[in-house]
Image (cartoon, rainbow, N blue to C red; front, side, top):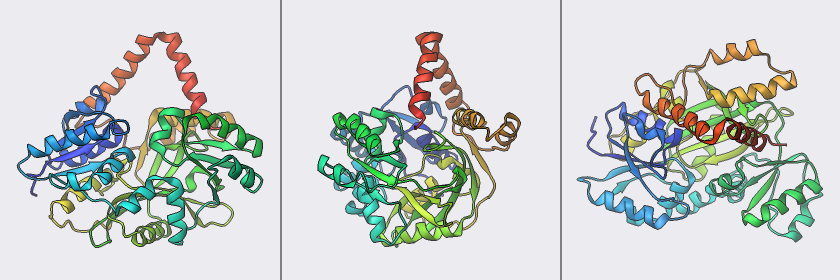
Amino acid sequence: MNTQARAFVLGMGVNGLGVSRGLGEAGVRVSGVEVAGWAPEFYSRYCERLVCPSPDTEPERVLDLLLVEGARLERPAVLLPTSDAFVRLMSRHRAELRRWFLFALPPPSVLEGLVDKWLQHQMAVRAGIPCPRTFHPGSVAEVARIKDHIDYPAFLKPCVSHLWAPVFGTKGFRIDGPTDLERRLAEIAPSGLDVIVQSIVPGPNTNHYIVWAHFDDSNQPLALFTQRKIRQYPTDFGLGALLESVRAPDAEELGVRLLERLHYRGMACIEFKRDARTGELTLIEVNPRLGLKNIFATRCGVNFPLLAYLDLTGQKPAPVTHYREGVRYLVLGKDFRAFLDYYRRGELGPVEWVRSVMTARVFPYFAWRDPLPFVMAVAGNLWWRLLHGPKNAWRAIRRRAARDRVT
């Protein structure tokens, strides 16, 4: 394999760590680009550190940094974004970046639409993909018009997720009625952030499917991978805590149909939920980038970062059509909090939870061949608790738990 081209991973965290491992284990030289210079992912044996300004608040400075790095290269390098903020930056500066870098993005109108959940919803509806009933309360008059027509309970979530999370720290809020909607919108108004309100698709966590795909320049999938949630946290509206690799032909067909109709190029993750009433799949959201748990797909036999790298460097990788099913991925701390919620409801006992945890084979940070990110993540967490004192640390944990619990 040609490994002369370097790869720049834009955004570290667990997502970037997975990309670095997927490429580094194949012999690709990787530079991790991240705002936090102390990030534990920088201690990976597969990643070189490159600290950058925030792509949200200082995108021009990030662009200048990348252009300076690119000018030093002997040949164009591959860019792999792991967050919406970096995806947006790349899309808006395609012409400048293409001088030094190789990357795959859908057309600008498609990408900008997918980053904004309201535009994404409209695009999916036009493509004929089943979606929850969705409203966009953009003004006081609009709220007054729609508040009595929403199917409650509903879910209020941001149009642009990466701007919302630093402010509110959740995926969104459950809305139980018109009064609750008006109260939440009043809380959100000072932030200036745009939101949508969607009907809740009924069904357990296990009805969630996430289809990963990489589309080549002929608008065809080079690989597909599907994971199913077993548990998530927060338990009603959260991120996957225990997941399993599965085959779900109907979810894959629906995801491919959507990306084909959007004339997609590059990596995408499409989440669906099966409606418990009808058995039909409904679109939850699309992320136009590498997924948070990409190391999970790699360990199951679909190395999406490497596929993207080979595709972009003209090495024409063969399509991947098979992967290991029944493999489980665990985020232990998040899954423990999910267990506590289920236990309080009487839905999951300690023995059953321990048995399910013991089935996991893939983890976000831990890896025998690359142990330092896990060690530094644990050490950093302990140091933070010692620095703030046990009492303050415990209060912070309780505040975070209260914030995470969507009520």
